[in-house]
Length: 287
Image (tube, rainbow, N blue to C red; front, side, top):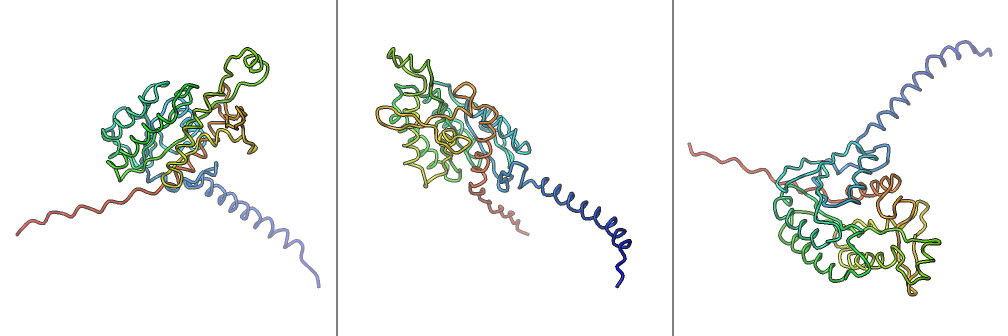
């Protein structure tokens, strides 16, 4: 039996380009899907959510990361609690003053009660690492935070309130740290991270498994290779920020922003979709 190789070559010249074109088109369509961006972040529910996020500098770092890894997500700064927030928006505002954590508690409460609870389906704020020093009474601060958040939840049951752990800093190491210890001076990051983690442990114990909790501190203290960044103090182990995520020891660098932003968006995507309100029936007029 004679096989016509000429015919096979002619058919291959016609069929292979078509197959390649279909493959390229399919890949492009998959890449363009809004629910599966190139970063792999699931965004299926975000188009429905109206999110309010109160923060200072590290929160700004996270939002910069959101713009980097998911530019299609709408991020808008709001100036007043009565502003309209469109679905699929992360609305944000600066709350309180750094180094005055009580001012952040009061400011967030003011914004939510002032109208933001009606304009957002999800609301939360975060403290900054600079709000905690070695002398901070983390337990007393947590009680003020809990009283405020529990009060908001009672007054606004239709809003999903999220809790965020306090970000950490790196711990000073090397010759400078050794010299400070020798001279009896505090090493940067050691006592401060203890107070931050004390607050975070209370947050996890109180709200973990009961309310949405974004564990920013746990993410910051886990290096890119999965290694936990820790240090020892008085026989106890405490977490610290991985140096890979910061250039100044506290704020997130580009790598840190991208890592946290992906986790942040994934977390937001797991929150319950906003409840659909039933339509208001039309008023029937008498004939």
